[in-house]
Amino acid sequence: KNGVVIVGAGHAGVQAAASLREDGYDGPVILVGDENELPYHKPPLSKTFIKDAGAKPQPLRGETFYTGSAIDYRPGMRIERIDAGRHSLDIAGGGALAFDHLILATGSRPRALPLPGADLSGVVSLRSLADARLIRELSARSEDVVILGGGFIGLEIAATLRAAGRTVTVVESVDRLLGRAVAPVVASHVRQRLEATGVRILTGTSISTLEGENGHITAAITSSGERLPARMVVVGIGAVPNVELAQAAGLHVANGIRVDHQMRSSVPEILAIGDAASSRHWFTGGDVRLESVQNATDQARLAARTITGHTDAYSAVPWFWSDIGDMKLQMVGLTAGGDSHVVLGDLPDNKFSIYHYAGDRLLGIESVNRPGDHMLGRKMLGAGFSPTPQMVAAGPDGLKAALA
Ligand code: FAD
Image (spheres, rainbow, N blue to C red):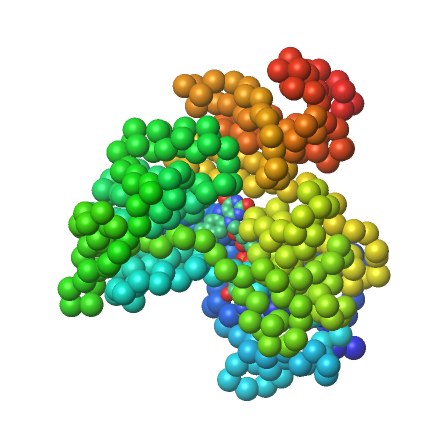
């Protein structure tokens, strides 16, 4: 028995290994990761780690988990080719691994900035612990920081570095923050509060050139010709899925490695999960590729179920969080296609939730510092319960009663 090989030791890969054992899988489990670390939590990197010189990475599981669960973790190992027909993998630098089942949990990587000067030192992006260490080190020596991209990661980094006393400018090419990920009212609330802390935000603005001296970044020049001094530029303009291995092996790829409702790729013994996978989502009926811890871990659990012979289909409710300064944003459901919304709570208090509807169906809730609404939302959407806007406005007691 060759067992299961998991490529990628991030949130999805580690959960898949754990779930295989929880589901009673007793064959070999090999977890291959190209980073030289004990697998760690990514979300704290942009929120706390980069500003706190003493912060330690938070391991996903303790070291004893791997030995104790007979998971053969191979750090610092990169897979460079899949032979789907022969069920075998080529290891970079030589050697091969055979598998009965393969789980691709290769994640995503920051989108590269297509600009001259993007290769200057001091121009960085944040995905891995190694990136976070570099940003922490650079930020200790950089008064002026420019952040390209007003998405979740860019804004988290902006808030974190501003709190650490840096002069921070965010440059976003479209005319609002957070893309289409949240309602305009949430995006403008986030903008206002960040600006109140002294973060400068330029929307509808792009960068035309990056200037450097002796190979290090010194300034970013905007499309309107303004020169923004910078000792560090953080590029946060989105992520692209790591699909190259799958593509070269002939697997079906479309904005991610295509998987069915049991996480099987177009070659059924090869599964894909997490940021790298795209699928038809039961919640919306549309094709999506989600980048969230929830999606990575729930898909991992399901991949393990598929390999251990179960046939359940993916049915987890999508949710996500982001901490931007003093705002805990929590999102549940998928709100694309909504046509109306109800607001609960108070914007000036920095505590409110937006309930999004398509017709009379509740699509999702975005909350700022109202964790109770978020948790209740997860229960309601999980139970397929869609309260009317009137029920929502009447407060949580009625909703809880209706769920009980
Ligand atoms: P990853 O965790 O990226 O793991 C993939 C691993 O595979 C990597 O270690 C990669 O190096 C490795 N790999 C790739 N190719 C190979 C190969 N050929 N051979 C060997 N190894 C390979 N989500 C939230 O829900 N809330 C948050 O607040 C949040 N904050 C975030 C903050 C930051 C800074 C980042 C970067 C992400 C954040 N996310 C957040 C997103 C979340 O971390 C990702 O959705 C999640 O990590 C996806 O898990 P994954 O296992 O698919 O990919």
